[in-house]
Image 1 (cartoon, rainbow, N blue to C red):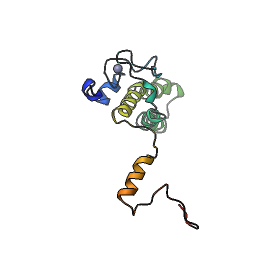
Image 2: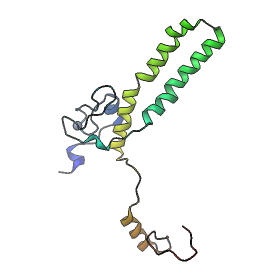
Image 3: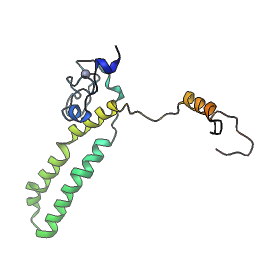
Image 4: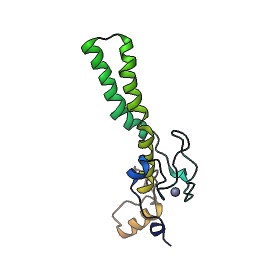
Length: 151
Ligand SMILES: [Zn+2]
């Protein structure tokens, strides 16, 4: 049975934000706060494909930390409060906007990676060869280099 029929595609937003497996939607994606499990405990999907790198941190910085820091700067410049005021306003706001969305955003990015079959870029030599035979005007990557020619 084809994989698409056995496991119909699930929305990466719905499964990722809940920290669920991108294939079955039932198993857990995380063990602990941000550590990914080695595989799904329900469908045994290997999570080794998952590499969101700095993606979650970038989104959280841009849409969570930066507005919170701007609020802290605005509060300080507009009212010049004592520093302990920031302990009860800016610091909790910063923690809430930076820590709470980290896990759902990481789940969303990992599940989007699975959904879109995203992976590190590579050169498909077979495809390049077929393209070169169909379209001889396209430069072949495996063609011998002419003297004085630069690639
Ligand atoms: Zn699963």
